[in-house]
Every structure is written in structure tokens, then in C-alpha cells.
Amino acid sequence: MKKKHLVTNVLIGLILGFSTQGCKETENPPPPTNEEELITTLKVELKDTLTGEQYSFYFRDSDGEGGNPPEQWDTIKLRSNSFYQCSIKFLNESNKNAIVNITDEIEKEKKDHVICLIPSVVNIQINRTDSDGTFPVGLSSTWKTGAPGEGHVTITLKHQEGIKNGTCDLGETDVEVKFAAKIK
Image (cartoon, rainbow, N blue to C red):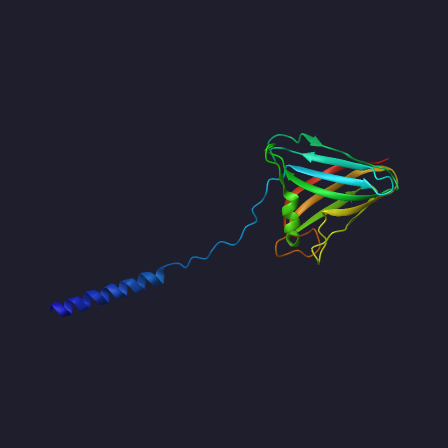
């Protein structure tokens, strides 16, 4: 009788053990996420290829999107009928004692990023000159100005991990700044 009771208890234990295992949900790891960096500063560096003159234009918002308005938002001013080499820098200047150059990370992950440089109403032709080996990136570009006028240049950093196709349509926008632009 003791043996029969012991066997019954073992069988019940096994059945309960297997039944709770079958009901347990399998845990799938969460998909990787793009940890967004805080980008407070966008620096546009332009060099006139004829004269060698260099210009820097900034957008600075030390507390990031929302909150206080930007401290600096320059107008891009260029000469008509000129040719410029451009370099774009992205920075986190929220802590003046520990400025982070986000541009380095974009360069390392250039297969997952694109910088879109879109002139509007103003006569500027922009061509991205760097690439990830397949598609343009946009940290470097050439700008050719035409007749005098005013408009805007919108600069957008897009994160396109695994979906980059050379266009600016896909992905998450990390930062977007619409600079006023004047050609004189």
C-alpha cells in the first residue's frame, strides 16, 4: 500500500511538473532599439573653394527638443555663383564640461545613417560626397550657389538601421533643423 501511494504521488508530481512547463510562456528577447543620443548642436562648416574662406553656421539648443528655445540659430549666408565644400557636425553640448561629438558615432555607423540636405526656394544645389560604400551619407557635401535670393536649407539626420536605401524617406528622424539661407 505504501508503494502504491508513493508511485501515485510521483506520477501526480510529474504530471503537474509537465503541465506547468507546457503553460509557461517562452520569453523572446526584445528587439534591439536605437538608443537616441541627445543632439543639441548642429554645425555647418562651409569652405569657399575659390577664396578658401571658411564659414560656420550653428543651431544650438542646449536642453534639446522642447523646453527652452534655441540659444543660437544662424542664417546661412553665401555668395552667389560660388562653390563650397561642406562638413556637418552633430554635438551634444548639454554639459559644457563633457561635450560629446555624435559625428564620430554617425561615421562609425554610416551604414545606418543618412543626412538629408534639402534646399527650398533658395538657389543651392547640394550633392553628398561621402558614402557607406553603397549609399550616400551626407557628413560631407558640395554646395553650388546660383543667383541671389532667400529660402531655407533643411538638414535632417535619419537613423535607417537595416532599411537604408539611399533615400530620405525611411527611418527615424534623430534631428531636423530648417536653416534660413540667403545668397547675396
